[in-house]
Length: 81
Image 1 (cartoon, rainbow, N blue to C red):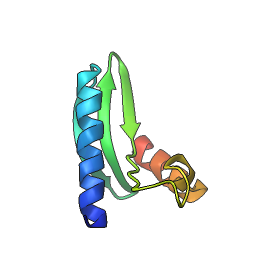
Image 2 (cartoon, rainbow, N blue to C red):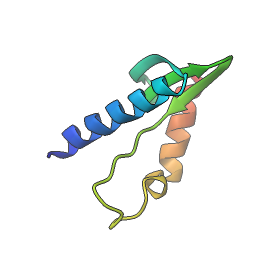
Image 3 (cartoon, helix red, strand yellow):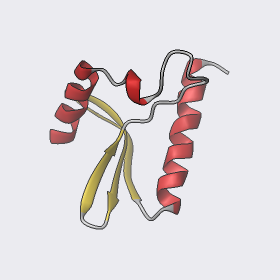
Image 4 (tube, rainbow, N blue to C red):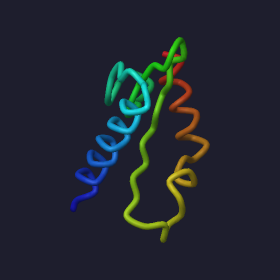
């Protein structure tokens, strides 16, 4: 499986999980001048921005560890937009 296919599969799994747990999916692959975010969802009156990180193994670290400070700043800028 290619890297992009793995990413799409992970996003689909995440979206299905969120829907099963009561989240309303507002948009997927939201793009703006500041960047892109995988899933924008709502639960109650809370807007949630989700970055999906799919890995084949933990050989290069956990998905959480793959979010660099620069990536976090970019995600904050997209959410603020």
